[in-house]
Image 1 (cartoon, rainbow, N blue to C red):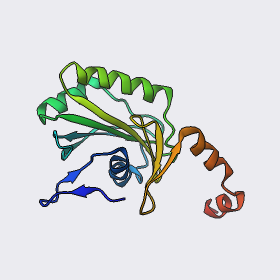
Image 2: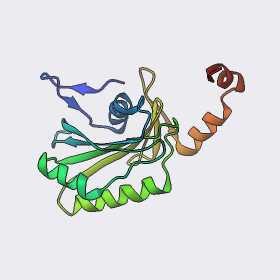
Image 3: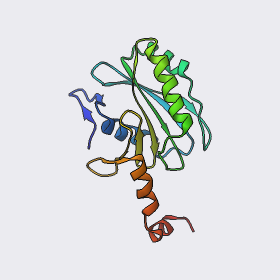
Length: 167
């Protein structure tokens, strides 16, 4: 799976899988929670990517008003909201879901669409628009329901986990 770029090299994010790949490329190595707003035009081409907040190891504040301001300043048709979980687990929290609803309402009130909110953990991203976890480490995306992803993570052999742990 590769992001689509036009002849000018502009990045087009027309699906949750493409957005997940983009989000993972930006956020997977961050050691603190970071929130980004990606402004898209009507053809879903990236116009800008703005850092909204860098937080702590476990949280970053997301202010719907700030995201709406950026959308208006950049004349965005729509927004992709991205943030990471440094723990490596892309599972959304209750607060993540509530924030998605608040941001969507704020953007709708000014005529801007929230295309998706993606939560990055390692090489995976949870997409609120699709309700799925998307893995982007291979050539083609892997797609899991949230329950299937959590089972998949739990079933990884203990030996593999031990090999990956620091001394």
